[in-house]
Image 1: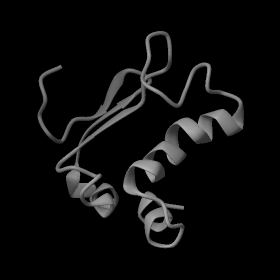
Image 2 (image 1 turned 135 degrees about the vertical axis):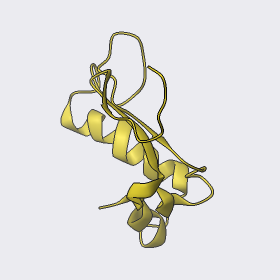
Image 3 (image 1 turned 180 degrees about the horizontal axis):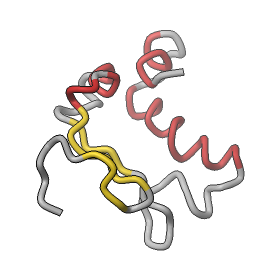
Image 4 (image 1 turned 90 degrees about the vertical axis):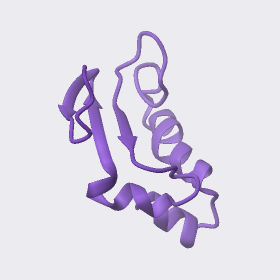
Length: 84
């Protein structure tokens, strides 16, 4: 389920939906020691998006808004032309 659906149909705020898809999911899967939050010693999967998803959660579903993706700390996509 997308974050937008959690907001529209699940009654969550955008922040609650993002946390549900990251930290809470890792906790439920028993992998929160290595995933789910951005902390030293954890595997870093990070998405940099255009705009503020707290203002428009559906912006995360638009591929054109995804500027940078780091998978396990390495660049997987760099559409925003960030220097890394």
